[in-house]
Length: 271
Ligand SMILES: [Zn+2]
Ligand SMILES: [Zn+2]
Ligand SMILES: [Zn+2]
Image (tube, rainbow, N blue to C red; front, top):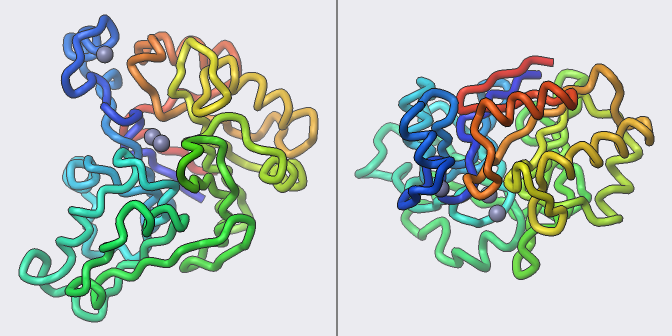
């Protein structure tokens, strides 16, 4: 199973669109892995997780032809994870040669609540929205996908996902604080080869809406103790905010000291 993380920032990116805090200033000055775009991943080169406003940039930067993509798995409808405006460009006259190439978008019911007009009537031949139920397992292409309820924005339904492929299992665990009991029960019952960790709060703690490095150390410890992870499990820190007060170098140091991997835009992992 392969995951490539195309965008590793929280809502406003790093540097933040209008921000001049020390982390954003450092990112502008030093560039490289300090520059983070909005959250998106691709699994096995075929399945997108989330579709933020930076998706178009990701398609150009990482040479991914969205014309060839048929599945987008959405965690929740915050704009750094779901930007339906660009999805509508799959229909003519914006996107040509898409006849018979339905793009399937999967996610929680909150997508329809937030965007009742998606997909628009004229796009329905090109885009299909599938609303998923928490805790049910779905076959999406050659993946098995189980949405779990996340502890994130209390006003809308937010998912994290268990994604299985080729006998391997991934926990795509953002955006979320510590998982609620019903989700945690399912996690503790399985073994994970890879865990993608919400690190929005960086050097600070949260656990209620997002997570910081310390929260993830606690999550990792709990997973090791309950046997749903072991020394071979890869834990990856991503979804960073400048408000978490870590440069990429500082994130790497914290990750190295605690047995995590520090993601950056374009980070790739095969397991
Ligand atoms: Zn987010
Ligand atoms: Zn900033
Ligand atoms: Zn969010």
